[in-house]
Image (cartoon, rainbow, N blue to C red; front, side, top):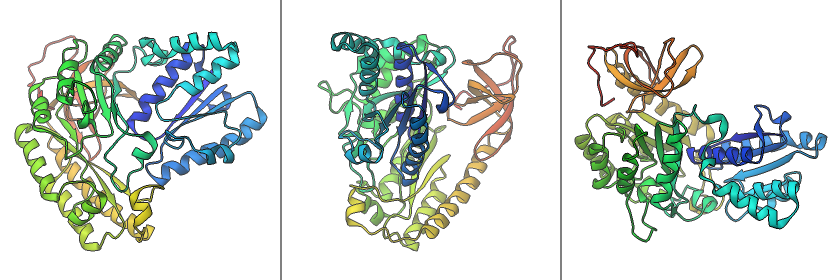
Length: 452
């Protein structure tokens, strides 16, 4: 028996798919790279943008003839397309789908498969509990000993409700995982070879606000920091309103916490931010970035921008351009606005910018950011940086610096999971290339830039 998982969207979905894979393997399934050869097919979907939703529908239409040829194949539609409340229209439109699963919920698929195999509700309950509660299921077997960097959800859902965002409707209100549950999972990952963890949340800075003892994300970082086998810790995504002084201090003080912060601004105009319901001004955001850079000078910063929000004028777009030009981020995640059903923006605001204009603004910012990132990365040429090696990519090892710079280099040694000093010889906007500054078997006199 074989399974195939297609994953779209955010890092949370990646983590969810890993859990599905591990649960399926506990039932005896093996991974298949091709959906056509699988007995169970899982589509883990995203609807943050219309393009992501369209891809999910495209996959569903592709699977219809496969299901007609092989009725025994189990098809599971999972994630934000289904949502926490379910979507009756999907069942009508795609009657060949066997199981509909809300985001992060393995239960419906596992129960369906167990019922097919065992039939007995009593045995089903026992096996279901064992499959989902055994902490060894965190990673699928195929990734144990190979996965170097892993995502760990710490807060799921969102209660902020930006006017453009569908996540609260699809993933529900925010709820934090208890701290001991998170640290237990990280220890389990470490035993399986993971050396870096990224703590995930839609607004990760709000971690713990719904828990009885109200621990903070900084508290959680300190606890994870004590796990000996873990070398690096990251977190995302932050929100300007909840990126606290305490959290910035934790990044500055804890050696394992990497100097890289993702803090979306979304727009550079105050009126647009107000209509987005972001809760801060551009001046607030500038002061926050200044504070981060003063306290953690070597940090790299990433942000998100939405172009073409309803009513965005040329002048307002120009203010976004000027903000990016001024603050000079290492990474900018760009998106064109698309109305999401049920959101405030979709209900009350006209999507009045033509797609051609949205694409033009997207390209203008893309070109600006390529120039800025290229200039920032060129500053690394000639320096030696510590790279956590993740995997072999074609004929080169691939890894990242503490500041999340992607680095490629050649070596005949097996370096997976090791931190290797690499001297950078070439840098572009999106990646860098270099050579090991020393053999892994010898000492080096080359100075190491530990902050990157």
